Structures are given as structure tokens and as C-alpha cells.
Image (cartoon, rainbow, N blue to C red; front, side, top):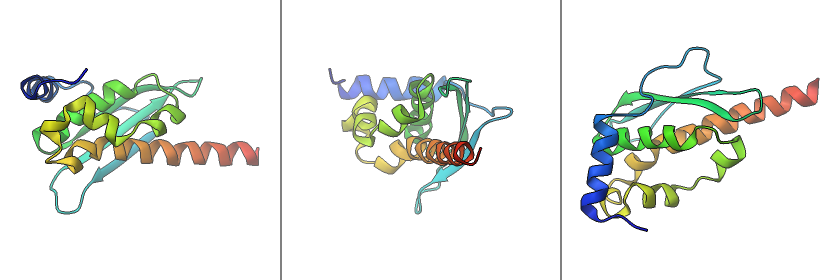
Length: 136
């Protein structure tokens, strides 16, 4: 079910004004800052895994426009409890649809910075863990 333009705007504003897990995470397994050239937005994504390899907590912080901050809040909520494989399977297309494509398609880099940063962080962490396991 797709949202109307107004519903998408309200959804984004709700996440922007009342962000989910904005702040910093102590002892994070992942801490990576991302941004896009030509855009002043910078987002730091932090996450911690539980003993089963699921993302236990996801936090974000940074500076940016309404769309990038709202998307970071939504991604933090969406990613919680997922495995690295599930995070890597999340697509920018699905994210744009969830955020309201009609509203965010003019700023795709803003809408996808948080997810791209989290995916990169998860990928690097996962690779490091696999390398450690193969050395053990």
C-alpha cells in the first residue's frame, strides 16, 4: 500500500521531530559516518550485535535535512533485530517506497545515506568476524 504525498510528508516529519534512537551508543560494534559528496548531510550510524548475531541496537546521529534525518530514524527502527544478511538485503528501492517515493525521489542521496552507511558498516563488521572465525 503506498502512501499519499501528504501521508509521506507527515511520516517523515514525525520521524524528524521525534527520532527513533538518535544519539550515541556505548561499546558499539559498528560506528561509521557516511555522507554524499555535494551534500552537507553527514550521518553516523552505530550498532551493536547480540550473541545470536542480530542487530540488538541501532543509533544514528548527524546533521542534515529533514529527509536524511527522518530516513536515519526509520532505518534505525527498521534494522533492529535483523541479521547482517537481512540488512544487506534491504534495498534503496524498498526504502524509497517506505519513505514515500514521490516525496523523497528528488533527494535520493539524502534518503539513502543512512541505509548505505549502515549496510557498509554491517558488511565490514561481518567480514571481520568471518576472518576472525577462520583464523581461530
